[in-house]
Image (tube, rainbow, N blue to C red; front, side, top):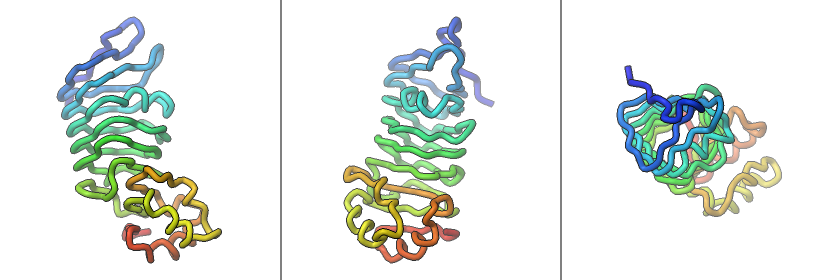
Length: 197
């Protein structure tokens, strides 16, 4: 069992740290009186319980580096862009959002990714994803026009794609055009369909 990180601003029940290194701790990001602040910190072998809301979480995680950590939201997170680095981390729970930073050797196999973008990863690389109903589109920004042409007017999922996007992952069963996507996407060489999709 990991030791819990105490609030260093106890009167606000707040974590407020800059340029610190945390190792082997459980950190709860739920907040009551004030949003937590971590700037340019390194977390190693920590369990990060994300009980903050979707709008605060990117700001809490931004500018930090997570190494061999477990990130586990208490409920589904729909995040704006998180600007942080993740190396060897395990993700659990339900996620939707974007990461702009390094994502290497991370395990998303126990995470439910509804729709997720990795800006700086062009390919799956050494990351691991679930086989359950996921569609992975590599180098998606460079292939937007091909996807649009393949789908025509049958699905508008291509509107979520921007030229600077790398890896784009979504759960096909949760998309309203799932039947269309299942019939048209597998023919594209840069699309990987999960076994169960």
